[in-house]
Length: 217
Image (cartoon, rainbow, N blue to C red; front, side, top):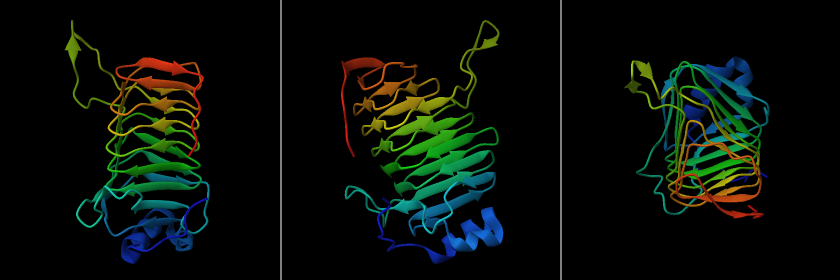
């Protein structure tokens, strides 16, 4: 369930965002923008599945370690598509960046606690009921080409977090990462690979630490 606390909302930013992306239908205010969340670029498309009031919240304070009076979140969508497929909460000081070729898909029940960046030039999917802790980075592109023997070797690759995945703080999830359902990513991990087996604990650099684990929000 989405918490009812809506103190700290910026009425002007909320109005600007909803009217820009949804026209008059945006007067239902499905997306709430909090005062500490900056709207740097309002381009591209935003798609919604849940049009109820406040189904998506951008910049709501969720953890006490982030001072939402001094640390700002950023919406910088220069193109592409950001899709919210249900109730989604993105916390203080998070950055959502999507380029012309980018696609970011948030499934129902996604919570990002704070100070995390999601940067797409290809496609990033975050599955249902997933939880991402603070100071994480999800980025599907290196932005700059690396050429080896006349060919690029670091083309952008998709990121896929399957349903009910918990990403620990200060983790880095890069292009090519595909994390299986019901899995946990330990704090400080770096992931770039595909994992088939569900209910696993990942850590370090693409390492499976434990199997048959469970976790609960």
